[in-house]
Image (spheres, rainbow, N blue to C red):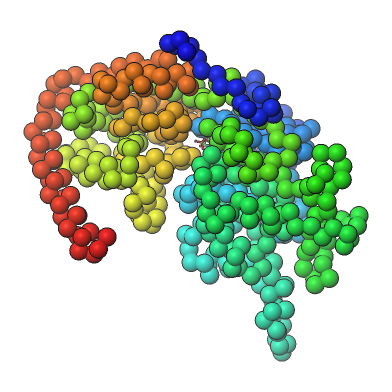
Length: 500
Ligand SMILES: Nc1ncnc2c1ncn2[C@@H]1O[C@H](COP(=O)(O)OP(=O)(O)OP(=O)(O)O)[C@@H](O)[C@H]1O
């Protein structure tokens, strides 16, 4: 391919070749949105949301609008474009008239912090129409989680209950569940009264990441449990009805209509989303999609946010910490995420930075090496502005939405464009401006240029750091390196001692 020529990959799957182009949609003021429940309109306005973003309008049309959830949706839309509300709003609207409470929507996310973030979005709209939202992420003990998800029948005094019979009356306390695969499987396998029998909607957010997560075969299990059919038992019956045992029963019959042959009906409507959605047929096949409809933004496979500016800083490997500190000083106290290539280098870099005396900002580590409780505390501090710089490994920050992150720094060059897209996407969200800086060695510059071309970002000027800024840091850098060396030795000794 000639230098500079844009790479347009043609998807293998035919339905991916004729997508709905989200970039042709405009924002839609709430007042003009057909069918929006006024209670939800009010809840959105309380969130300072007065119009739907293009991807939200496009999904609305295929769910609440004329599309009426008839096809499964695959959404590929840039970071920060509002994918969470794109699925949360139609699900909440669709369930707003439900008569009986049972678990009807399941949203699966790869990490606990991400699940918490998504639950907080549902929490802002679902109660407005009387829906409850649950969380299954292992944040609290299993027992606490169960007590929030499952309602026990009221016991009447003087009656002796058989424990087995008693469990038949258990009901869901939630209409919508936001979960990570691990805890979801715990409830599927061990929680009495937890059932996916009535599920109508399944959302797989950060799909490409979750499809790599085979944890206890969570996806085939969910699909299997929602395929359950009581064919012939109640022909022509209403889809949700009381069973002979007094609890609810959803009857999924074998579909005979065109397009439903061999599938159960009512079917589970699926929405899968990512900023870098896989186009790999074998991976997508795992989702067993029904007449999938592809919604994507623009012609290129990878899109960066419209108001993102990319810059490169070229320096020798051994001077990278100096350039980083000088850059951070230039950025002042603006919130910033620094990405490294591994959990180990995240830890080392964060330790080193904290040995630079008198930096006017607070720097913390956020990585998979840490305990979840510590990670959550750090994230809270970053959200609230007590921490200004987060040094992070890749796996942890996908999808993370922190207000006010103005800058992202790639301390290590990302190896793939997907990684660049997700890292850079922590800034320039929701139409805001943001900057992404990448530190490069001279020999990496060419490869980096090629990488960015995949997202059509040819414009990536050099960001210059004056020599005087780095020179003034030399002595403090030398002493910080000494301290780092000592710390690394102490830590290694401690690990050996506890047989890590
Ligand atoms: N219609 C809207 N009007 C104003 N702000 C919105 C609207 N929809 C979403 N937002 C805000 O935009 C930000 C980004 O939304 P969201 O986290 O859903 O993006 P995303 O597309 O899922 O990004 P990523 O791919 O990184 O996960 C959030 O802070 C959200 O509150």
